[in-house]
Length: 150
Ligand code: DAT
Ligand code: MG
Image 1 (cartoon, helix red, strand yellow):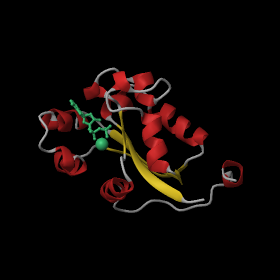
Image 2: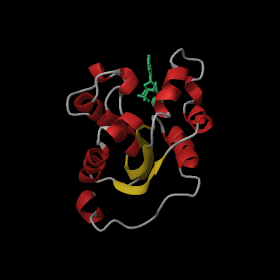
Image 3: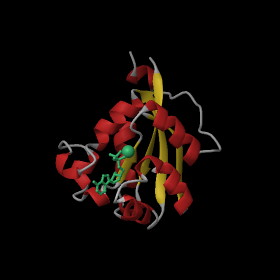
């Protein structure tokens, strides 16, 4: 199989709403392997880099302010199609458009309080992992791999 990696964040509202364990549980039950995990209170500069592609948007300032409102939990998940499947598990950007059973559909209402982030492409995953985990991530063989992959 061809493992990929995706960077996911539990945003400050998700952390304060005690959704950290729920997210980790969903991704691990799916079969993804956790290779990076930490709680961090990011600086404005760090968040402006993370959302650099949105800097011209009208909501940029409020997005950065919201993302700075408390600690976030940053994760790196490894597994086949980690980026694509991770986005499916998150749901659409606006929770009203998110499919039932996705994280944003199940736990959020407002686009500006959508609780979770996931890399939207393999390239952005690479950049986000470098930004959030400059120290690198972990490499280990998961004991259940033979049960998860054919
Ligand atoms: P996603 O988080 O699904 O990758 P995005 O990268 O386009 O979506 O935007 C990043 C975040 O910015 C998103 O999770 C919530 C916020 N956002 C996006 N579009 C918005 C809008 N039209 N109004 C307010 N906030 C918005
Ligand atoms: Mg995005």
